[in-house]
Image 1 (spheres, one colour):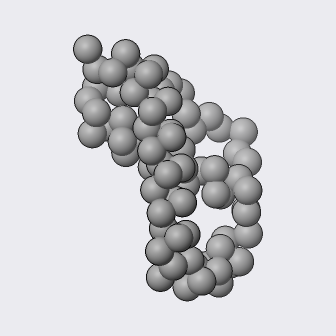
Image 2 (cartoon, one colour):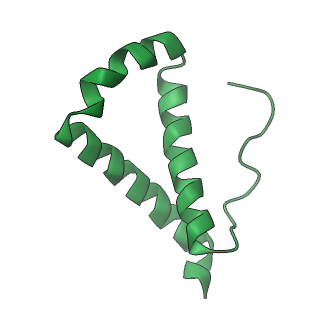
Image 3 (cartoon, one colour):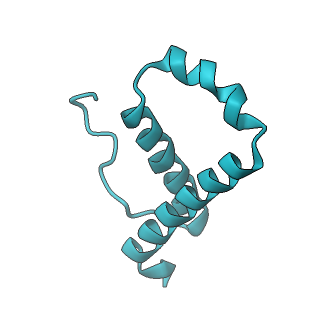
Length: 76
């Protein structure tokens, strides 16, 4: 991982920005778990057309969105 912070805050202006942040959190989790980009690209066909894998990825994004929404007091 880089020494540079990539996540200065969970605060966003809108739910849309919050959702985009949730996607980034999810992607960064994958990147941290499997830092080998070539291997990630090699494995992509295995999950890109697998409904269960895509559903699980959506679940991770949803969990991260819950975290971001809570941090933003649900944009109230």
